[in-house]
Image (cartoon, rainbow over all chains, first blue to last red; front, side):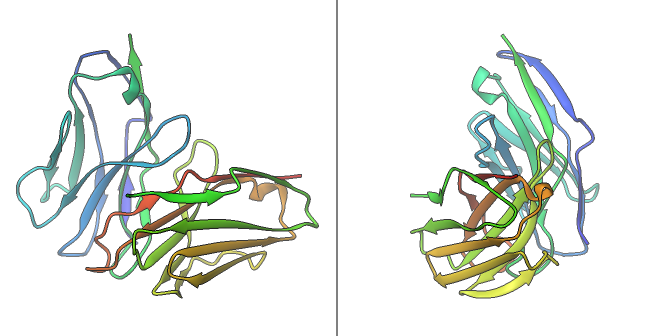
Length: 115
Length: 115
């Protein structure tokens, strides 16, 4: 079974600063996708960014970027110019295995933005 | 349009009641998912439907009964639930172009309370 580990239960950052959330994963697949989802207090799961493992280039979406280290099985999320609206739970996720399969999530990191 | 809708938003039911949760998407996705999320925990996969056929059942108790009447609709029928089944129930959908890779889009969830 795939495992996803987020070792930071909570992170705090000043508004406009940069913060990095860590994630490590374990998979036996050769080709796979990784995801970061955000869950604000409304509890709607929102896709932040995704990374295809076969791509060497790190994915970016506006202020969000990843540092994907395939050999180390590491997939961290960097949020630049943090905004109050970024406050949420952030989950790292990957598919549980081949096929139309469900996602396995890490335990999540609660991100607090200090004004 | 990346919208997945879920009804109802909130549901309170007794242990002897029968109720249903509904999920709908109009993105042409052919995979649909049910997840259960307890407070301060990550979502956990319950069921996966691929092309309207149940492809994954994660050993969920029989008091939960999924149904996929067509490619746009997913139901979760509830019967004789226990108080520990109180949780947020999330529906998601994805395309199935390349299995195990497509982004899942989540609905806002149904917050279920079992008395």
